Image (tube, rainbow, N blue to C red; front, side, top):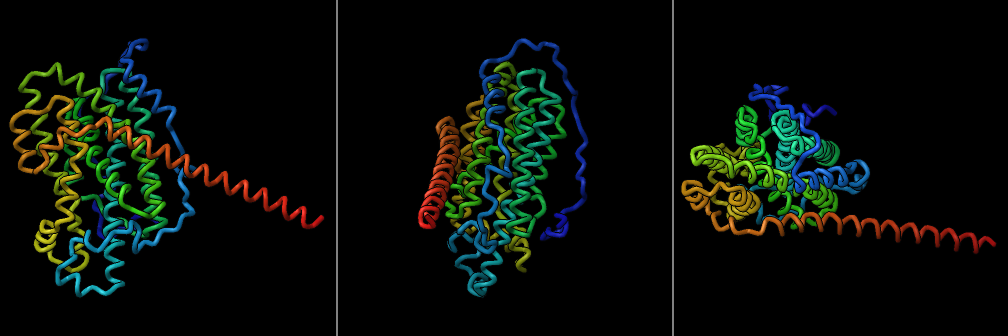
Length: 369
């Protein structure tokens, strides 16, 4: 079924056209490169995988409880609106929330694919072009997987959130070659990683857990790539140039903070927009969720050298400044380990099934004799 027929709301113009800015840069130096970045490029090649075979698409998904979301996590919980919902209505609300969330993941992955391709075009160093080429393939795979999940398992898609679309547009319109790194690798990918991780670590549903675990294994490399490239480059910038990037980060973080409220879902259940926004702001669970979303962004911003006074004040206002001391390397290592552990568990289970089938066949043949 065409995606257009699954949208909960009108998605707007398609294709969405963002005017390109900046120059395409060629490098004629083919024998040089940073060892760390070339090692990441090699890892990017080694870790390519096929979403059709690595993920068990035969796993059943109940679209009305796709993530095992508890009642307390719903922004309507504890309000008169919640009390009026039937059991069927609550299931439909869960379906819309999960579809809305995974739809934003899907749109973000397409944005990441386009930004990675833009980095290939505009970054001056060939080692960075090499790695960005592998990331472009990664993001294509992620968009394929999220799209398949929404089409086959949920049957519902939401348009791109206005704030995410705004940040994507700002990132792509900027002519400076480092801005796709900053907007995508640090802000959008960092927030997505935190959101993926929170769902991965709390859901008891095997298919979304598989998807998120494997996608996060790739995303850990992408954020590492952005950190390496920007940390090296930002050491060379003037204070004025760094402040310009910090302003972009501040604006982007406020946009991303307001991205994952799901107001569009509540509007589709008949709640006026202003009231839906107020309900979302009052949700204790959502406030905690939004704060934790910055667990990957803040330490990365600090690590690459953007830590001016105005940026720190903005993070105080958002209540996330203390996240700057998080151990980003440890979080990334855990993302890698969880994917490898999931693979090992799945392969062990498949091996046990094969052994059992062989033993059954042997026993059956012996009985016939």
